[in-house]
Image 1 (cartoon, rainbow, N blue to C red):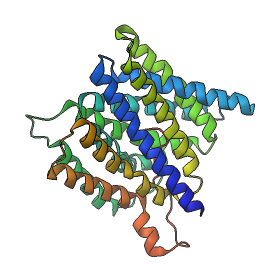
Image 2: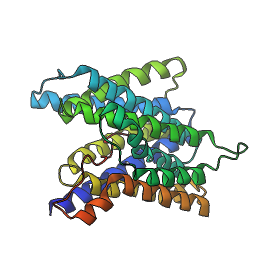
Image 3: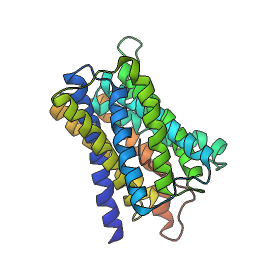
Image 4: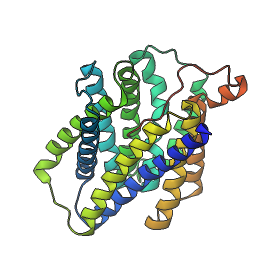
Length: 300
């Protein structure tokens, strides 16, 4: 029963994260508001929510390992800024798909940051992901979309963020990690947007607030959802964001959905399943397990 609860919570979380990019794209379509400003709204709402919750719980705001929680916060901020810029200049569909490549990059970074042994068989899944990225972006050096480059870069940086998240969890709980994710995120995005800040008005302001609010809601559902579901299975469920983004992007923004993009989405999703360790766990059975499956990030 708990696995079903975890699945439902993760599906809601991924829908929220997709809707965050949808509302953000709507705001950028209606006004000159930038992706950086949208990210600021997200971190501001998150800061108020998390700090209020911690104050209510009378929890300590002092981390056990300041360096790791700040590294986690800064890398997440850079990844989010790149992701928001990605859908500002590109499509909702492609931005979400390319952002979800980050577990592939964890494979490269985890031996250096976490001291984990990489499984060489994952190179097959890395190849599948890169082929999927090629099909989505189609880098012919003539018509490459700037938004796709930013979205793919967000997945790359988020790979670092996941590795630091793993290390931070060894010393601090989720509340502290989330708090120190919101603080540097709010400060960094504020400083970047300040010279060219444009206050959104009317529906653009509504969409900007909704984008931030549903993103924070998605983070919370992810955090709670992984208490009831294995990380490997959760990785498969979290891949539903590709489906949500495709349906919503095509329906509301007329995003192009060619055979190449569909094939790329399938390859990226297959790579997510492969690097999560889900297939090996299925073969070994419940008792076999798999060491250190790649978790999905509650915040990218």
